[in-house]
Amino acid sequence: MNVRSVQVFRHKDRARAGTGISIGMPIPYTYVNLALVLLATSLDERRMYPMLFCNSAAVAVSFYAALLVDPTAKRRLMEWGDYTPVGFWGRDLLGHVAPLLLMAAKLRRVGKQPGVPPWIWSMAMHATWLAVVRRRGAVLDLSHVYVPMSATHWRAVWLCAAIAHVSALPTITGLRSAIPYARAESTLRS
Image (cartoon, rainbow, N blue to C red; front, top):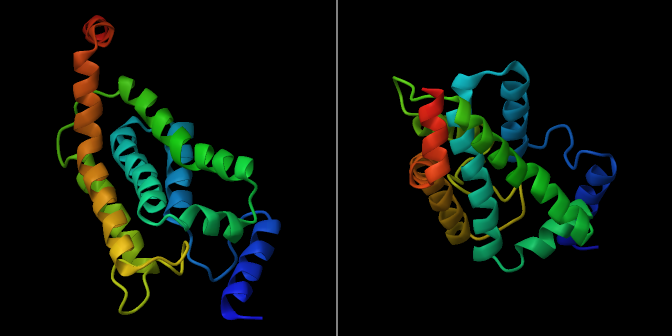
């Protein structure tokens, strides 16, 4: 049995256990984001919504960027978790798309906030997680957390995540101001 099949075997055992992760394995950032989205939503912590929107956008964009830059990533992720295509896309919907849409919907209830822009908090949180889980010598390489990819692919994924952190909130704000019914609804709330 070669090293790759041992790795896939270990990951399949973790997936069958329910979570796809085991003790000692770094927690994927997708799970961190999901936990924060659920916590903020259950506590109705509106001040966190803009930051979590930026965060959720970065998580979703980086996932899809990984699928684009590495054509084998989807197949390897499906092996890693022993997922069927329906299971894979279902988890994608729940882990990447749903938090983004939920936070976008929650942003309607949040006005402009003074202080540090939410994307800075979002990027700081992502960078802190990276500092905690990264391996010595591998600055942006998270092959030990997700699936192995080349350093070039990881840099592209991180670049896409950084762009999403910075541009998510201005993009949705601009879209809302461009849609006539959104403008009318926001003036009614004022």
